[in-house]
Length: 195
Length: 309
Image 1 (cartoon, each protein chain N blue to C red):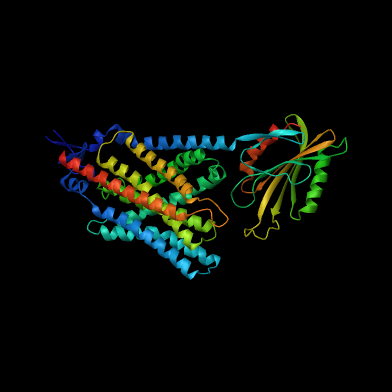
Image 2 (spheres, rainbow over the protein chains, first blue to last red):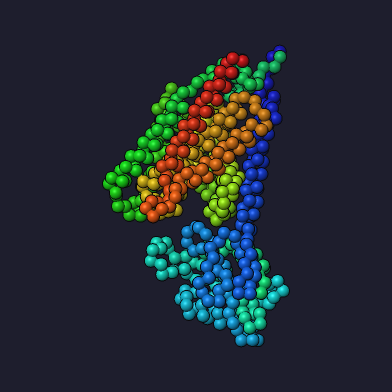
């Protein structure tokens, strides 16, 4: 008697597990790619300016146009608002609390930016140092007439610390789309600061 | 004695190729030299380059002043043209034994969906490639292979493997290349439409070059995966076979886009601009033509050795 057998009963290892092998190889490759991404994004370089030391992201553009600003660094490339980290040292009367400095600073910002909205203000502790945190949002509509893009909503956060007769203001600003994703890197900069 | 069944239709087999059993009919198709497929690929490469030159010349000669909406519409139309050219050549060359239009269309649409629903969100929201992938040369190459190459090639592979692959219409090794090319062009169409929309329309001259480059490259990488898929269906291949095919396509994908960036960037001087996209088109045309020639030679060699055995 002749019996017919499906070729599937004689399937090789390659036939049976080829799909899974492709999926596993792809997942391993993507995982390695993820590690590469994390490695590139965590690359940082030290800075030491105006009595403040820390680590800033590698490959970012730095400029120090304003008085008191010891670090102003922005992400390269991309369109729209570039994610920006800034460290500023401002003289304050002795005995001022971080919350007082935060209030003055926020009022000053509101006078310069019509569209700014204060979202939250609270006391925080970073690396054992007491400070005050202010989160806000504004519309980035700079006066550059060559820009043809629609203004974007920018979210920002300032951390205020008082050290002697100086206050250190650490600022993070990013477009609303990038805010959450870029906050991790800002946190690394914030925790690396020494003043 | 147990008879084996044909790996395509399930009828009792009479012949084998590389441990795969075939009935008479499907042994005939599996060893059929399908020259129309290659003619359609080379025809597409030539027609696409001619099309690009014509659009570029027309843009330079007439200098049309288009509003943003018109630029977007023109860009979207240009983005679809490479797929239409291939389809026209393919059905003209393959009319004696055409693949079902519905199958080709379904693979094309599946790849489009995969590109729009999986690749673009991954690239822009999860991996945010533009923020880190161009940090240095090594990062560009490795990121291009590990993330861009592997994910894109897997999605095109999946569009074929989990749709038409098991059907009786997939009855020649060359079908792997045909369906994978359709997937590659579907994928490229979405990438090109996205590029046009994200930029609010494109300059017709340089835009059409970019569209042609992406289409030729995506179709070529997919063709490589398709060759491995076709062999995997009609010959019993080892476990590493299909992962190796996907890896080869992913590596080429990553290297191509790095190389394209390198060769299209020229030195910026006071009198000249910073890039020459024609070099990129030449590279893509060589890649597409070279890949088609290599795959045609491999398929012909396989058929010869199958018949000799």
